[in-house]
View 1 (cartoon, rainbow, N blue to C red):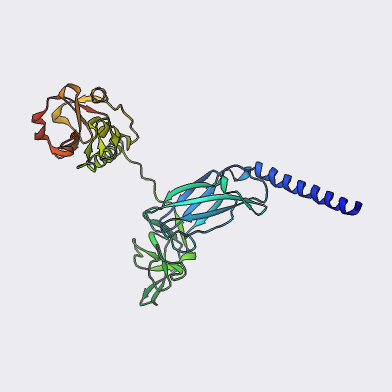
View 2: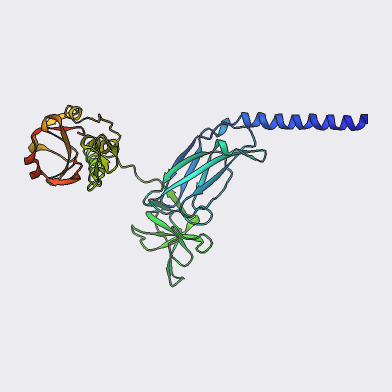
Length: 331
């Protein structure tokens, strides 16, 4: 009996020690801080920026879930290359959501998972060294070969052995083997994927004027999309709002948060003349009782009343209103 009691006591102690070790390990974990180090049209490089804070033996399970509802898992220390999700290749200019979960001692800590949404680039630039062999492919067969006499930099897309592009296609059905060059002196030629190095696209810095124009367009496009919606007194919902609510939620799309008051909106920004209106300017009417948003091309959008709802109207429609002012918030 003493031996049996001693056995169970030892087993219990071992279990306590094991549980304590697992608990201690779990308590030492935090959520991974995930970022996209690089993005290409056909590849994303993810990074766990706080990887060094995790105990030795920790790995990270990476999964991707989109309309195909597919997953890929991979262990990595500080970065991982994602070309596909295990089933389909990445597509250009497409947003993908990745989930990164820490794994330690066989335990998957889903409660510490981190999600990150990354959009692939529109194109991928490749650099191919001098002397590399390029080929032409027709009907699934190599027809011409040539050695590059100088280094080549060009945009390209991943392709299968028969020359077809693989973006968005099933991995098992179309094995990526080549890079097809899509511009430059070697447009239409193929080089082996292992011989083409992805390089970063030149950074394009927008001018202030371009940023202003893009912001105005974002605001106006959203506002115009509410044409035909319902007028709701005090409303701030998409296609269900009042006049100042329409203006408020349209500006919010650009990260500009303003008052839900037609009187208050007539005091915002800077005043401009009616003849100098630009898209996105606020038109104040009826002594602070009504506002609309100028869309450009002689049109404005405004939430009129319960009968007329939200409408895009020509500027000539303003003859039925008293024009108080025009206010510009983006300049």
